[in-house]
Length: 126
Image 1 (cartoon, one colour):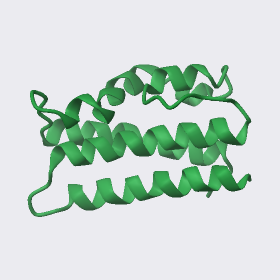
Image 2 (cartoon, one colour; image 1 turned 180 degrees about the vertical axis):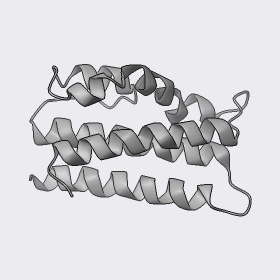
Image 3 (spheres, one colour; image 1 turned 60 degrees about the vertical axis):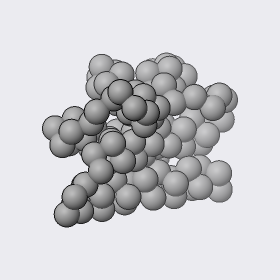
């Protein structure tokens, strides 16, 4: 595995750890849980793209990033709608006017967990 791919994975795992820790806090900040869940998923997709030498821009749209895989991730293709759901947590939920509650954050975590599991398998990570 390329060094740069390992760096993406390390960053993704950091986001996963923060999301899980915040979710278990006495008074969770739900926006932070959803944000870090989205970031984990995004960085895992970018790790896959990096490992396969597929160029990508600095974007947060998980559906666009998925399209760059050119069908190499059929399990993730099946989650396309969920990726669309998760994408806005990268930006929109971080600003006034957007509220994230425990239900939305839990759904974001569930989706991110599926993305994480799928991409770890695709990258050969136990």
